[in-house]
Image (cartoon, rainbow, N blue to C red; front, side, top):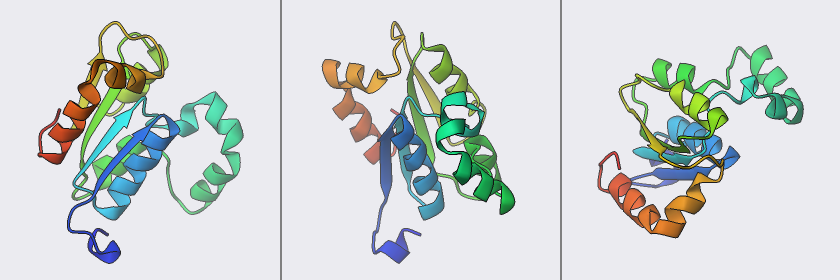
Length: 142
């Protein structure tokens, strides 16, 4: 938890696979908010990840766990605020993000005209990265 690591406030930010990690750490450690770019929300359903992380999934399954963020966020009594940024034209990222639709603490932020997985590059390029991080820190959705 946040207190166990000596923090008064905790925020997590990640990109791609790191965004999945940020979401999990944010949930498990009691973060106030999480910001993800191109976030896989159910990596067990992604063929590329299945091969790379097969042992992890086997361990989680054997322990009765899941890698599905929707299930984890829905089951949590106090999930963090989460903003998922993704390219509106990237089918895989859009599908993964939309799996989180309807959860009360989750905001989906599709980026129009972006069809690449590297959506964070657009935020860095146009200067909006700082704005969305500031919004997260100030308790806004972005």
